[in-house]
Image (cartoon, rainbow, N blue to C red; front, top):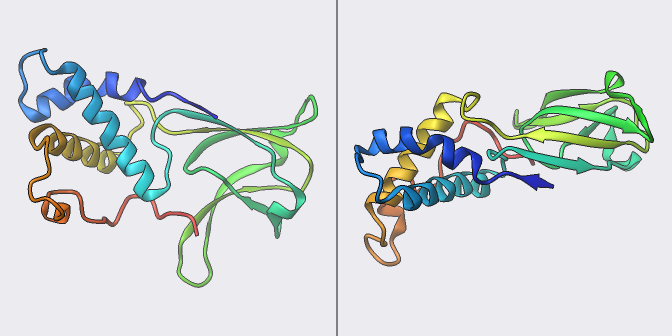
Length: 173
């Protein structure tokens, strides 16, 4: 797995400073750190990939059920499927499947079970961040910047954006 954890904090710095009304550069490194921590917080809580990431995955035949294998990381933007040295991506597709019991979307690779290697491109660049996700990143960043210490020890849940949230992506089952 190759993950770029510096691109988004660098690209979001001026927007975050504008959001927080910071007009000096003395805290730039700290703000980049808070952006990175906000992104990491959302990724960990919701089992999603926000930072630009490339993942090499080798699904087995057992991973394919009814012609689809659940992805190990979500959301994936693209997949390159190789059978040895041959690109067989045209025989596969990324799709969202809805769980039959609770309606939970699960991202899958559709296609025939085979010994293939799949390179998944996940995450976002600054221009492709969904507005709701960008808002969440900026709000958590601002909170971390303004409140550098726990407001009430042992009661983090009273701080903004620290309660579990309904997100823009439903975690895989």
